Length: 311
Image 1: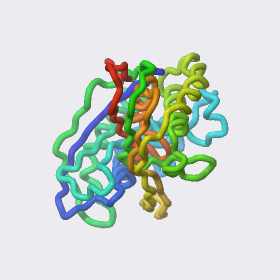
Image 2: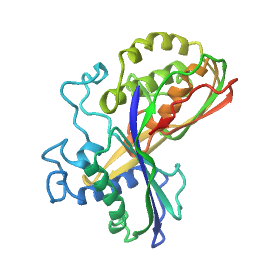
Image 3: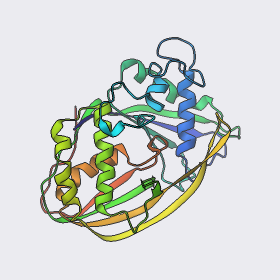
């Protein structure tokens, strides 16, 4: 699997007594979305409409609400009503309500065209012109920069089959479901986590990168191996909150898991996949910053290969 990645970063300083909400992803995504509508459509000089009349041609549509391509590039997308958005906001952890400066990162999966890049940069510059929620607080921009190379390639390969221990920490709530219900610490074993990770990586690679036949062919063997990895410790909690949609003046329930899981067993082969998923996020509402993970290898002899981006 191969996936292009581009990262931007902007820092803002609030001009008033502004505080982020406990879960800030929806607010920051909303600000970026509103600013991106103002920077104009990819085919005209007019601002994007509230409901895009030409989905797929507008920068906002491509990054925030992409249509499913025809024909579908992968069987996992059969029955889906929408494609996973390629834009991931890199937001503060829950509870970090005071950030001075506030650093907002943006990670885009897939090749980022020149026009989309310029409009995204313009949108990040325009955020200080927007009102923050119901208050009159605004922000001043301190800097805007691109992190690393544009469209660097994430090579997602397998590691060496070594025994060891590995900790997965959910830094933002991971909305992982099974049969319509949120996972709990009792049923989110390594096998379940691996399936979420592999489904996410294969889907994204088929849409925005390159998915090879052998990437799918190896799934049964990996799935069987994942079942032999044991959960050594689990410290997870369920969080629930609501996000407010300013466009629709509606509230939407949100949920997810925070905390960590410690796994023991033949985890060496899975390490690069988990590290790749730490970059792509997992679960629902990743475009709101949910599903960000951090991977710590505690005991794994030798340096197995990892999915390092290359220019």
